[in-house]
Length: 228
Image 1 (tube, helix red, strand yellow):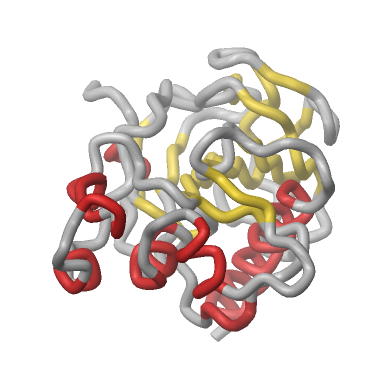
Image 2 (cartoon, rainbow, N blue to C red):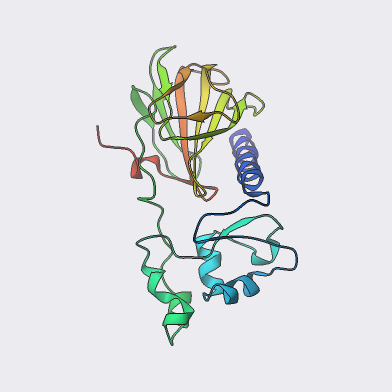
């Protein structure tokens, strides 16, 4: 029960990070749209010549009526997606886009291992939202990819000293149970840069708990990490 509560809080924190990162009035990348007052998913879909089903799938929208002003939505299919040809403007059978399989995350980002050590727990999507890497205290933790630190602290019970790095509009990585943090919120980090040291804060052993979030949802880090 405590693990479920911690995971819910962590998911909420990640969602808040994504929302805060998306808010604002600045320009967005090609293929994305920032929600304005009065917008609906249907209106946005029509304006971008796609379908509501596509927008729901590309943005993991469980409730398309709950979009918020300032939220950034993907309005073009991910590169290489099978739905790239399902644009309403280029097909006479938009229903096929509604039934296309959901786009699997990757290979939208390439990661390096965040720490040396033994993987003592793998991702299963339910009670393990990432992987656990065990080694000795003080083992360097590095940024798995270049990005910006959007959270650095120990305010989430059960995760100890934790960092969350945003890499692009789709991907976040999280690093928990660190002994020491070497970066601060708002700081840009490079792939392979030391950002922390392995520890056992809020853990019964020394390890790194590492998660990958794709559009706010946990995904298996093994999809992006090179084979050892």
